[in-house]
Length: 255
Image 1 (cartoon, one colour):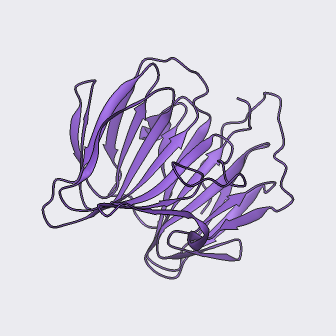
Image 2: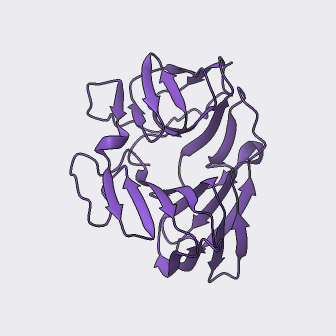
């Protein structure tokens, strides 16, 4: 199955300097912070974890895999000029912000905050028994100083073998809009499905495995693993069991 056509980019390109076309980022090599109430794995440099080789990828700046203990969470804190996307893998997370929004996010739900000129928010696991497992994703915005905005939507009914667009620059096909040339796809498997994803000229990909194990053009990735995809016209994804990935299709650097 081939994903929908990509937006073609006609602006000048700037090539990433990386001779590898598919570069794995093993889960075991990520940064790790255990705060007791929060167990966090950092794909890119974040807080006390610093690795100059992993400062982000194109517009991606943060991918944190967080597990939050029952009754705990992130208190009110500020952000500016960042596109923040949260994806719930399991459990439930309660959101509140300075814009007056409040919601309980559950597995398959996606939250988008355009921090813009400034917003404060909190995320709390209000369950007394169940932890919450999530991905916290930050992207640099293409435009700074925008009006802050919050959106949240459930994609939990996404079927196996049919990629679903979660986030995009133009909000097409029911996706949540962000201020960056980046598409975020959810891909699920029950077993045996083979899915091809094509990249437009000058674009690159980041594949983050959230569940199970997936073969990316012959490279096997397990839950927590990721891979950067550069200088590839397309990748083929396959899995033999219940698996899930988030696939980022990213525009050129410097937009």
